[in-house]
Image (tube, rainbow, N blue to C red):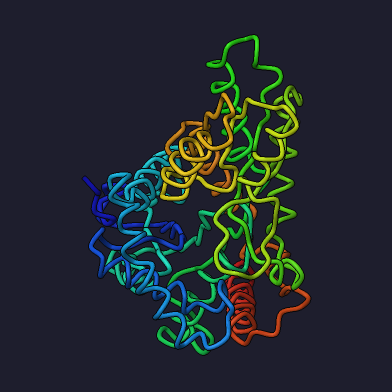
Length: 383
């Protein structure tokens, strides 16, 4: 049963520090109309998808894809994203209450881009709770304009146009954790999960098993614009392999390509085909850019590749490391990350003071102006 977001974290009636856990979200239910509503919001988002006649094609494509996506959700028993987000938020805030009592009570709020609870719902709730501080936490370890950036553009629109943050000081102190690709939370957690998964394999094949680090792909036009994502995913992979002592061969592969335009590769299915043709038969997949189970792990990796593609290509081993979910190292690592962020007195990272070199989007400019304004306010409060 999904928890009520207002009940996650501290049980206190008064909240000191609110943690807004940003994610793209998923359908509000597995009904086809809610799946269509989610897809429609996705295909209208020009931070992610860029195509001609988008205002016409977006609704058409989303309507056609909704029944197929609904069938996939039915096959995995529904979308677990919100449940995992709230469970993670509860674990993080419980740890924070112990690690940082001076900023307690802490409370986590789910903040989705395409579905409820969205930024308006989250801010309304944290204001009712009397929160004095708001920390925006991206649930994406590696920054991309298509994920964290899109979330922030939507949040800045609301905070500027509805709450008037550029003209008036917000009643809370706001700050942002926009990325954490080299943090203990992601590196140590996945190193531990990989060691556990490798230990399950027969010793005779363990050393030759290829680790396939899989991440959601992005279009090449986004890479060429200067998006940080592919470099940061590669950094996470290198950090995990260093933690493991580089015991196995490995490769960074990409999944979830959508549409006819060129995307970052190699796509996982092409990589598997190439490795099998070269005589490799044993693989462990690591969802390195995903921190909780959802349709792209439970269906795309576990069904489309582990079953359907395995039958086609005839490889022998295809096991998958679980997502970070509520792993103790992960929850403790994120609590430490937030505690360090608070202690440093940081509003934004240096990376968020600039845009991608090829960016010309007005909404990205507005977001940077909003973040700069928050930084100025926080510096004034510190003086």
